[in-house]
Length: 83
Image 1 (spheres, rainbow, N blue to C red):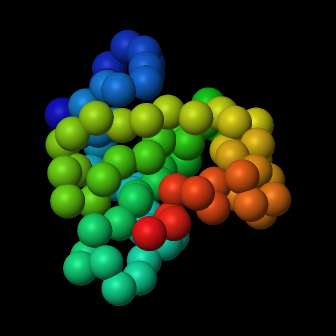
Image 2: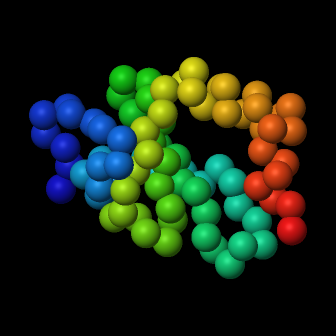
């Protein structure tokens, strides 16, 4: 099952984006729980949880992802990993 009308939206079931093209660019000692990404035809990027591949997909523009990565590099998300 894939999306037919081209309407991609934030929170849509990842299953509707198809099974092909998902990648796991980040992995580590987390027991196989990863964030998977998929480049969409319009340039946006979908993210899903690897342990729930049919669950919701978060959809981001390249600019949104670049801003997030820049913020992480500046330490703006360090508090999220503090124990």
